[in-house]
Image 1 (cartoon, rainbow, N blue to C red):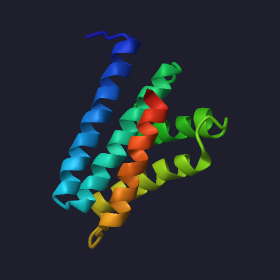
Image 2: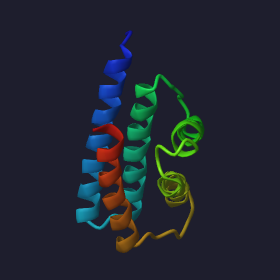
Image 3: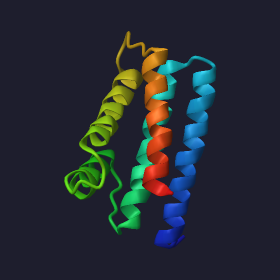
Length: 125
């Protein structure tokens, strides 16, 4: 199936919003590690859509992070702090999913979800 760039942008934007809702449900039920996973993926889909809006595409997590840094962080369109946050979430998602005895706390998760909701508006709307 061939889709247009606009269709893919809409799809990834929609996936970001849906994943953010999943994170909210996990937070309500105090599943902190799973929440970090969904918050990261909400960022991933949003950043992927943002890159596509600029006709930049990558299919890997590493590529998405590198291209986001190159085209949006280094150019000053997105703050370095927000770029670090995306990388931090990637690392936390990896650690929370694959390492033993990793337990994220409510305060950390709520900080990331608040920033994600703010950045979503900045990035995509």
